[in-house]
Length: 476
Image (tube, rainbow, N blue to C red):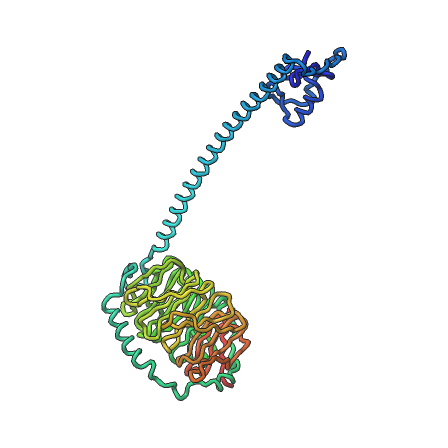
């Protein structure tokens, strides 16, 4: 009776219930603790499956002295057999590992191909979605709006752009500062002189009409209002729909609003006269061409749209590679700037839609404003406390104004010497002196604001807070 593992007579013999083979107890228990299987059949085996066998104590024979040639040959043969068996086992394990590795690599390659295909399909679907346009409709639409895509302006509209540029570019640099315009000394004396009650919570923007008395703004409930500064009350309420009001604009006495459900509505004397919906998604900002005859809008569908206000139809739609968040026309009207969530400001040729220049900032563009000098562009990144000034001639950032508090809105005045920045912590006015080529800060006020505009002749500042409170700063 020999041990199956050692091939020697066992001192403490035991038998396996699974295979019936005899083993040395200490050897089989050690094997079970490491592998948990029967070494002969490969079946699951535990110590409880071992049966003790009774036998007379065997005297272990003396080991061979390896002093004779037969003993040496026998030992060498045993060693060779063990080596051959081990080599065979290793080759078997290597083949099995190679097969498992080949299967894993095949599965990984298949998974990569599937992911690449799904990513491509996702990108194609996103691109197709961004180019979906919805024609203007509804009872107040003025006929069917024209669906356009990345094309130049119609000839009649392009003529208006050229005429406006020729007229304004000749007079802009030569015009003098009006005699009754605000000065740094007068701005230093600005204090809060009027504060309304909260009207439209969630307000994002405001616009002041040419008279300087009517303020257009709205909130998250889809209602916009016209607030009279002289009467200190809402004189007209305008229904924008179910979405929040995202931007407001005065167009030659008419009021325009944009909403997060993609609509742009134009009202005259409180009556809706146009309902434009060229964007597939939220409209983020509006801008009015200096001719007062072209309206621009930007949206989350990565496009900007130009509308001919004489026909109230979309005449051009230009797509980009990122959602737009802010917009503005150059003072001469031949350029249009749109800021995106990717931190880029793209400057387009209004007539052709070609990208004339690009500026890169560190985050989503919160607001931008062209200076009346025609060469500077102010922009602010969402959540930041500084305002970047870019020179269009050099295509370079020439100044960073540290306001010290978060900035939500920036606006140049008509003369191009004052820049107002507003945010939740207050309003600050920065002044650039051409004679000294230096910046100064004539005003800092703690009035909270999400949007700000210059009043008539810059003799006041009108702002709206996130709670829908209108504040006026001026001389008391």
